[in-house]
Image (cartoon, rainbow, N blue to C red; front, side, top):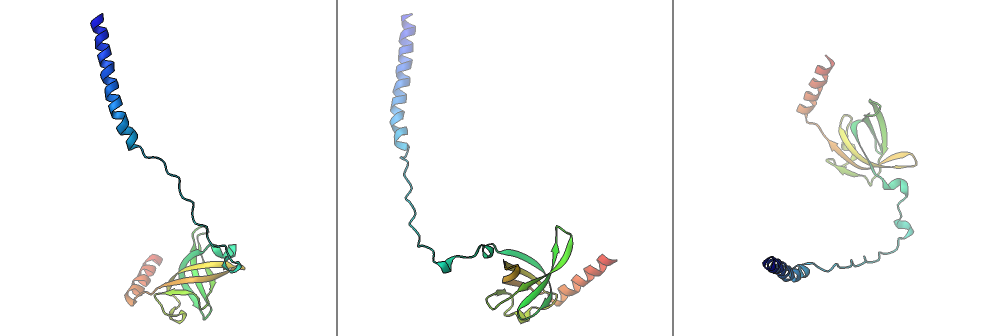
Length: 151
């Protein structure tokens, strides 16, 4: 019985020795948590810096141009919820960002457009317009596809 007790004592001693020798390494490996530094205070808003809530959320639309003038663009858009196409008018001013054209005069009926816009006083104001001009070959292919679809 004495031998069993001595073996148990040695087993416990070795286990404690190994555990105590590994413990300092584990404690050193654990980093102290750091407290985050608070952000720098920002400058107070001026009254002119505040954007009215109705202008904050810009929306996106795309479709085919059905009418264009110096200050507006009418686009035929497909409403996926209703399942129909609808003509939507966008007011355009000199601040609009144009992509793939230099001026509104270059946009023609039939051009495909992507429009970023905001709604103010119930009207849609274009903030950016990207135009996808089709080459003559692409126009012919599109007409052929439409004719085949009608047959």
